[in-house]
Length: 179
Image 1: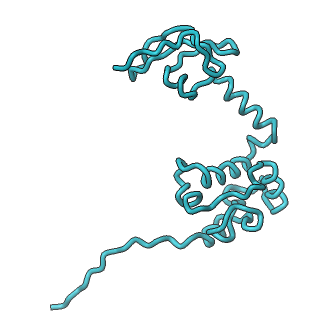
Image 2 (image 1 turned 45 degrees about the horizontal axis):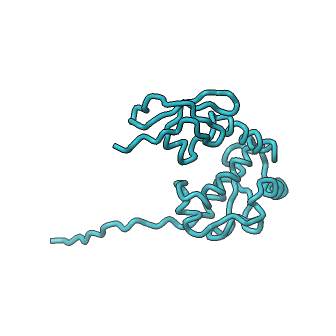
Image 3 (image 1 turned 180 degrees about the vertical axis):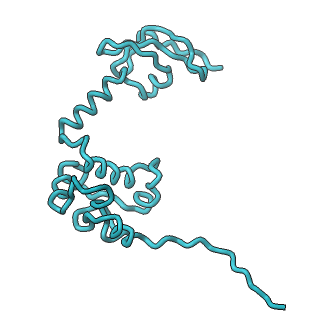
């Protein structure tokens, strides 16, 4: 068992450690913390030290507000489309990453900014009122990047017709003989 590291009085982000709390059900050391906003929170010591927890939750709430304030689109369906594109291309933990970023598909520099992507989408025919599956982003060249010259808004039928050919599983071949 490792030696307990006393975190009392130390600061981690917006949290100041007040004292020791009981261990977590998994046996991890926990600490009473006071957030700059005044809330109290019990946090695992390893989460404090590695920066995983930096506030009582107020920081995440503020960041969500800032994102929404910057471009006003955090609650838009189109914003979720943009985030999905970015996750598929840049997040190795995303299940779809092997078929996008893992194949070298990326997003153009212009679309690093949501406002630029939104402007293009609205000019290119995106319909925010379209029923689900009737207005989806499609890469014209399935091996090409997400960029204005290679993307369009189509329904799911067109998109299904414009996908890479599925690799067929090798099936066993049996030879039939007649006796």
